[in-house]
Image 1 (cartoon, rainbow, N blue to C red):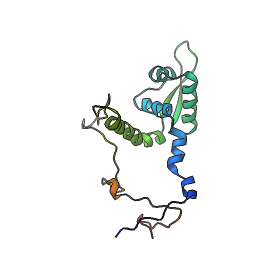
Image 2 (cartoon, one colour):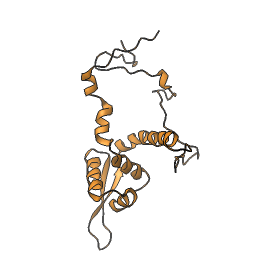
Image 3 (spheres, helix red, strand yellow):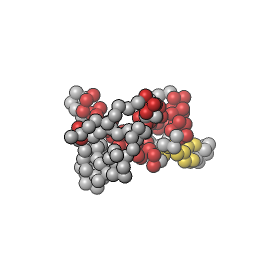
Image 4 (cartoon, rainbow, N blue to C red):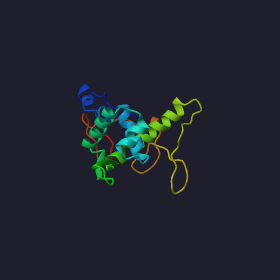
Length: 164
């Protein structure tokens, strides 16, 4: 019989990784910049044209993403122009991609009357649709009802990942 884990304390919530992540990427322009980076957008003017936000907002978000290590700046210079920068995703940004894909798929399913958005993601190799999923360390799908939250702060965890 499964016994529920002990409740999470306020001190544990204060160290919440979700809250820390949202403090970095929880603003709409930030996620939209990352979406566009993964769509191949790299230059400031191209972001500005696609996003239709103010240059000040875009500049601030690009600076935050660069300082946080999600984007890296790459210098380029068009003939006769001043030096400019392109923005490319780092490994940390790529690791955030399943979250962005999950947000897109949730939005397609729950925010669009037809249940489908304006784009979908497909494998370049197989042509099949790509979906965000919950998988365990062995690569097996896990149902939300089969998941449990285990505090690593208030209980010890054995190397197998199970509470002692």
